[in-house]
Image (cartoon, rainbow, N blue to C red; front, side):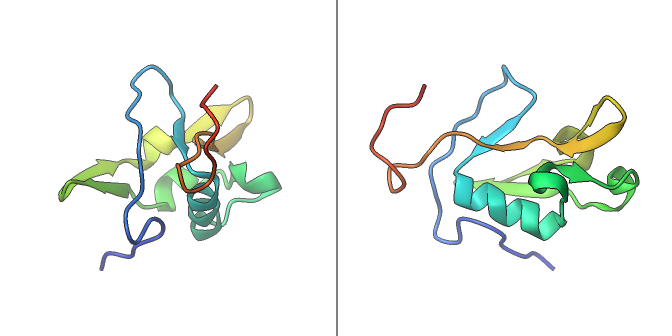
Length: 99
């Protein structure tokens, strides 16, 4: 069963292949972190996370793009952390330029 975690009415997105992080609106990233139950400021996940977390699917223009857990759970030193980062803001959050 599919569950919509964020942007139920749609939202803006940026596709950037030049980074290992997945960037998104802060409110929506917080919803993903909460869904995944990440600890320590919302980024650290249990060592078995790669075995239990689901793929996250982005739907863009009615086309599904699955993001496998190995793409959004990163090993940093001795920890596993989420690669979701609240970085860019949508027009509804702010009218300031991206930097």
